[in-house]
Length: 422
Image (tube, rainbow, N blue to C red; front, side):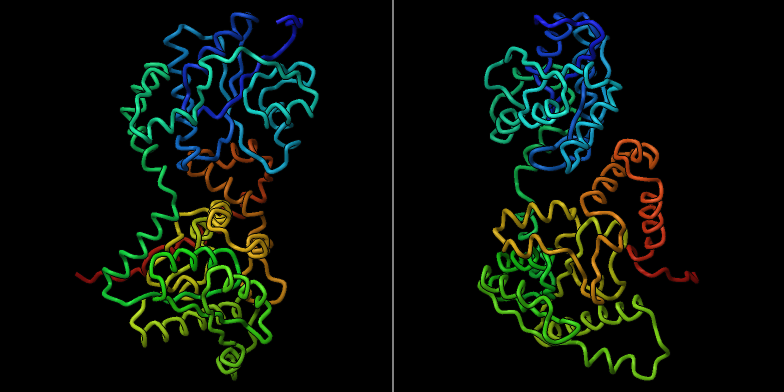
């Protein structure tokens, strides 16, 4: 290293899924060359329990700490860095969390995207020798999945830790894509119920499109697809037609406009929420009507993001027999849709329940789904609202809105309470 080292902050950035000997040797090399404290940035903070990001932040942090302590290395600090959709925002947060000014930051990373983001902000991005040529966290995960030897590629402390925390088995399990697990789930639940197939409401949006693709894989022709627009012509017809073509299915259409008019006739004037819930519950009634006469189960289309904040109508879109995608975050639904090869217009459409003109999910929630998922994932990782606000720059007001939704809608996530007499 030929550049001056005075008044610099040395930062080693990575995802560490898992931490391996290459990471360890790189940190040792930086310390030997600079004789300064190393800041270790654990990126993709909110990503976990997926094929490419199997480990929690605390697990990654623990792997690093155990490995460095065994080597007698104490001159380091670890900080967590969430992902952002904006490269400049990510790089700005990178500097803020390290406490470094642009001219002070010296960044070491083998990730091309990290390098590019930091260089755009004017940071000094340097190369370090490639230790264990060809070694990467991805290659280690692949070896674990294949049952090949991987102990020699990670510090002993990492190997022992992952063995005792069932990390090895989790990596293997996560090699199976979630859509495969969902297809098996649908098959099994239909079989267990003694029914002949499944009934599915199609909105023209991404959640019902993904569920439709998985239902077809699971049950073939034993699925009835029903579109129930609030008016004619169907405002989502284009997307539905694209889905029919992509999946080679036929979607039956029944407008619920007249049913709605009959339902509210003679009732006092309501607001858009009350009317929207009638639309949603009318769809549930129709789905169960056709399910009953065909001996089918009703499939839901609520994703995990919506489930966690109760963003669905009780006894409306929440009135179903099984929820195939309820453990998949909305951002992961988009990734799944790409893998399933669903039409671009469906993937890019603004998510909406179509309950009133101009209604969109993100407008109602107050955050984009990417932002919402970040908040929910960090909450599940044990971060407080104050910590999340600092890490993400989301305002306290935005986070309070999510907190309120979770608490207000908690009743939707359980059976109605009953009075116990005996």
